[in-house]
Length: 283
Ligand SMILES: NC(=O)c1ccc[n+]([C@@H]2O[C@H](COP(=O)([O-])OP(=O)(O)OC[C@H]3O[C@@H](n4cnc5c(N)ncnc54)[C@H](O)[C@@H]3O)[C@@H](O)[C@H]2O)c1
Image 1: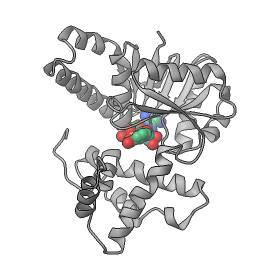
Image 2: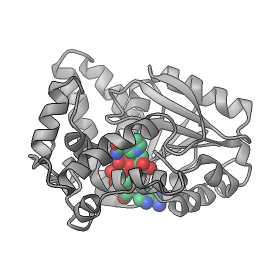
Image 3: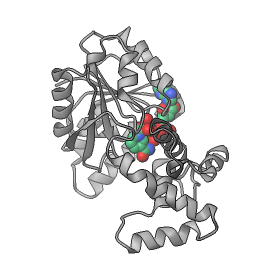
């Protein structure tokens, strides 16, 4: 079985690493920030204990999963067959990380990015052996959501594509091949869901709780504001900007000043305990 390294231990990275370990992969979880790594370790332990209590796994299985995970804040530990990055949504941060890792890994190591909206082609172009760069876009929460968009570029080779599709299947996910386009499929279609809801607030037509209630009552699983809080308002704002720029700045997709305000106030959603709503820790 391939060795996996997940970079970034925030909302997505810790869930992706847990999924990998639960499905038998030896997994390194790396974050620049040692306190984030500590928190990810606590969260994964808590999640696994929850699965034991629900009789979904037994204590021996829990121990076996825990043993598959190695937590680190030292980049030199990041040697693997497949690297999945889930760090901040900034292209230069992702390419700098991949290039650092390319210098300490073999040329066959696959580099998968969990970017929600950045061009995988643009990232690949800056990495040596760009044919091994691919998008592997998980959904939040990564331990639960089945969909994985596998984003190939014109340069992605067959081995990279098939390895990542196969990896997603081994994680009991449903891989869907996507072309590299702004927001791929889901984030492209979903963008107006957030932006139009924010416009209603900007224009004083409604408030966020009413909008959420109405959308949920009309059949959507989560209203736009509850969903933005789950995603992280910083990530959602970065994705909004990135799709807006990549689509040639159409007025209808212009990010909202409310999103910027949330980021400046560090009201990022569940991960900071406050976004549009307030959360108990761990909620
Ligand atoms: N939040 C979502 O719903 C969601 C869904 C799918 C994809 N994504 C994508 O996943 C990525 C991560 O999103 P998130 O919500 O987990 O963000 P997050 O803010 O929760 O976590 C990002 C983590 O990356 C770490 N980090 C930053 N730079 C680093 C570096 N150079 N090396 C190692 N670690 C670094 C930070 O310390 C932080 O812990 C983004 O690209 C985002 O677009 C997010």
